[in-house]
Length: 231
Image 1 (cartoon, rainbow, N blue to C red):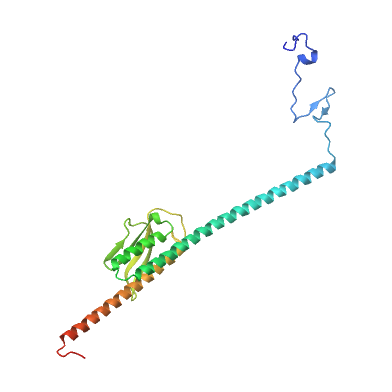
Image 2 (tube, one colour):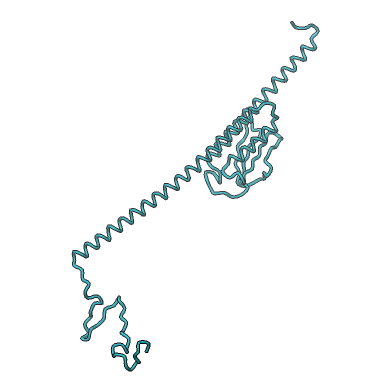
């Protein structure tokens, strides 16, 4: 009616809607024969082969891109791991450097030396926020503020003249990813052993210095008590 026609006055071909035929099916003609939906589209055998070859080339290019992306991602993972490992090795070397300076610092009491060593150890481990340390020498115990016993522990004995006089312990207060031995790295085990070696050398040096001081004191006492001055 908007165009000026009523339903009765419309042409016959506009009164009934055309039947819908899905494009994925064929339809039958008047005599029951199947007719293609797109009868004017035809491909020769050569064209089909050419199209298939083009699709195969495209698939190969996509596979190459996928492989390249996988290699790049794998390289990125390796680079990230290498960077992390280098940072950990740097922390370990800095720890050994600090401890060497602490042990050679003059006029520093052993108690203060051990406290500084324990703090340096905590900072050198992979997870310093949950790391604590304890040093036992004879009947004396030195430990960091938050130390408590844990099942995630690394221990190295302190031996003087083949006799155990104590131990150095490092613990994680929480569970961490598994590694060489529990949550600890192989390099952390080597670091702990090296620190124990430095501590044992320090203890031996302290004993030698104490023995020298005692010998010097006895010698001075003998001189002071001698009836005739020694010239």
